[in-house]
Image (tube, rainbow, N blue to C red; front, side, top):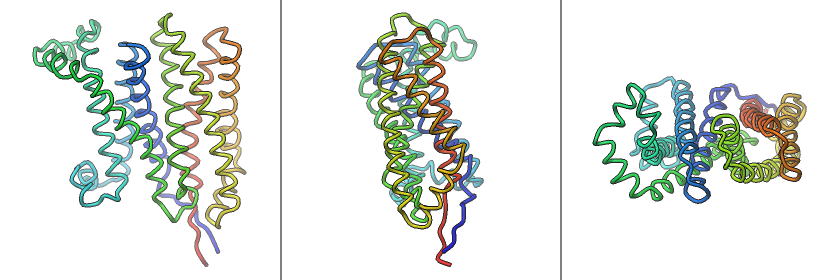
Length: 316
């Protein structure tokens, strides 16, 4: 028995999976916050358009990696789902496309009402058009919560899909594990909360957002704890698995970048920082900003090392 580390899905796909999960989860958390916790125009505008930008950049990385215009046209065609329902890239592409459209429609009423946006040279001219006001008032505002839920459903689909895509490769035991979609979904929402905490602390800075930030911090603490439990289960699964799983375990758990960079700095340190804040409160922005940056870095490192440790086993 021998093994080979795969070299096709590298950091390109890691960036795609990272930005896809982060962007989609950012939109989901932003819209659910606006619908059920606090009506927050600034958070919607920042969260929605940065999330759409992340999804766009991540998809571009995938399309560049495909290196074939025909393949790109194939996966963005919704009819391919009827011809190839087993294609997770096709499903994910459709989730991403519709997520971006519903996200744009949800944020449109806030954008039309924004004086700062209306003063911008090109965007302002578009927003001042009568057709934009009609679309905003008669469609987007009228069905605002329905649009929000359509965006949420597609966003959850994107977050879960990033793990399902890897889980569909039976030759790589590290990826072909039912826990991968759960791990990537939890990581996506943890990084999204970290990103939104950065926005609330460094960009938006509304004094009345204190309780919203506390809620985000508590939720992220629980998600990091869940991620640590899932990774602990992964370690035992791989250590007692077949040749491919065992070699992946060796690559990961003997690598200082994985142990110190991801597990230590990307999970344990921000978990302790956030737990201290949840229990004792914050004395300033620095601890939560530091924890958020570490969580965001750890989210990428998780996907980077999962690509790096993908191992094929050969029976010779």
